[in-house]
Length: 249
Image (cartoon, rainbow, N blue to C red; front, side, top):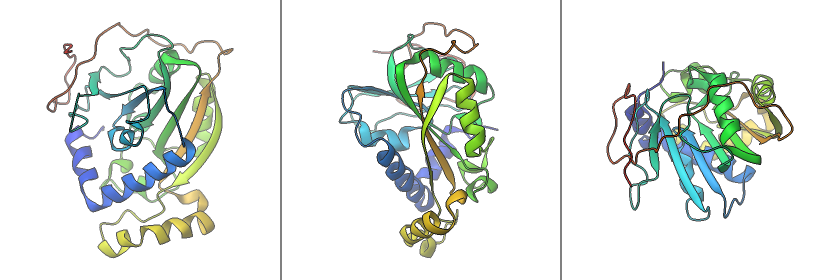
């Protein structure tokens, strides 16, 4: 079952969640050092990491599924988040340069149609970065965190999923080696756990990150075409189960 947006927000407000966010952000920035002047889309619950690119991209927007609910983001300035009906994306074909998927693939109940939509809205040779729970890691085994929900992946499984939907994998990275504990001592030594994990437990990171590129010569994946809708800007949480949203400039 997909966690409610308030559960996700509460997790990232904890010490454990803040540690996870910091580590995942660092891994993403390592894989995508610069993406200036591009249009960036975050799917699922990607707002904990989108902020690192907010000042350098041409435009950034976060889309959250209605079945999860949506909260306002960012806390200051114009709202850049909207609600959509999983798996449809209210965006034009070839309209986005890059997509970050966080708390998205493993929680989707319509995974293959969703991947078809991701392929559709990405521009030719556009890039996606999928961040998913690693099936071999400890974080996927505990339901006390969002990474313990849904369907975790191995690198082979995620690479195959991407290939089957018209993407070619470019690079892969493991992160989040710190145990999924709320112990202050463990969280304070997160850097040590990261170093030890990279050297001695490489396959067992808590999250798996894979960058992939849209293959323009591949046949378009089979999936439902998105209805052309204008997404809403969220100023307050929308209850899980909401089916639509009206536009607000």
